[in-house]
Length: 92
Image (cartoon, rainbow, N blue to C red; front, side, top):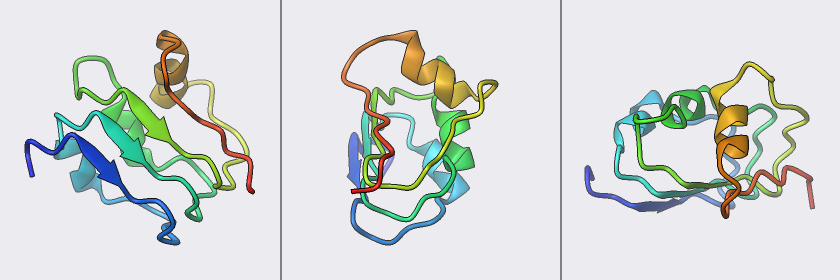
């Protein structure tokens, strides 16, 4: 699992993520679309710190996340580089 680069967890009714997810340092794409997240999972804060993981794309569309804390590393992650990162949290 340490070489896992993409993880698709969409459409699973998830409301939380395990802390162990942060150990996937080579993870490049994390698809969390269409789950039941009301807040950004805390493990994303650790995963999106510079030099902690290779994560580049986190897809959260179709969840009901209302706001992102401005002190959160996740917000910095999504504004640090304008690449293909997606944080469309509008419920469809």
